[in-house]
Amino acid sequence: MADFAGSVIGWSDTTEGPSDRLSTSRREGRGDPHAPVPDMRRPPGCPVRGPRQVGAALAGLAASARHELLTFDDPSGCAGRAIPEPFLELAGACVRAAAERAGAVRRIVPRHALPHITGAPRAPGQARLADAIPFKMIVVDRTVAAVPLDLELLYNGMLLIRDPVVVQALVRTHHTCWDAGEELTPDHRAPDALPERLRPVLDALLAGLTDETAASRLGMSGRTYSRRVGELFAALGTTSRFRAGAEAARRGWV
Image (cartoon, rainbow, N blue to C red; front, side, top):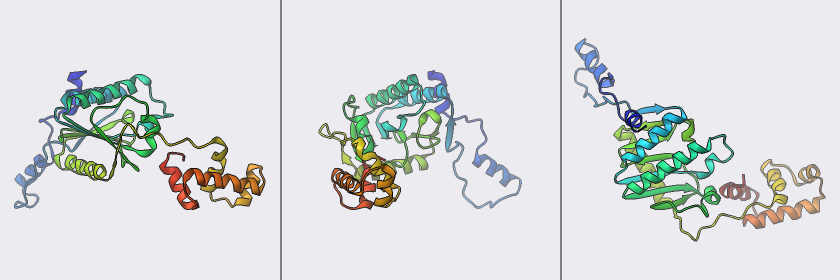
């Protein structure tokens, strides 16, 4: 598995890159002879597909970690997905191994994932909360990055990136989110779950139904519905319907 992972993370020097083709075109008299030749012998990214291949590549990343590990992580992203448990265990073990090997670890998780973090074994390094993350990502030693092909699940395939410009752009994105994030401490706890009796009321609000229509559809009187709306607003800490929807989304109730 280690040999395979290394071959996935590495690049073939025998593959003709854009700079090779540019040099060829110059020899044949095509193109601008004075334009600078970029160093692009390596492709910007290597797609990896298939659970076995992704697992091997993750193992290779974990083994290569030496100094720093940066991640955008959403532990709730796999909830309800048909992902085999052995793959989840392998992926988790690889990330933990990389974190233990790296000298500095910075993990950013979205606020709605708190229920999946609270009570879980504490991962090495530092972690911060963000209102949202742009995509899932792993950056090792600022030299190689792994991003899911669908930006959400590594199980569906991932892109290994070694292009220094792209990697540094991802590092800057992480730093910007890190500076704006909130330190995750043991004192953080998962937000209270939405009471089941208020779920239909929240759904009606999000659907933009009038109170009269919503009460009729839910089979309750207008007074009862208004009281439930008040309970929902109190739970969300707002009196605005628009802010109620935004706060519900922030808490992961949507």
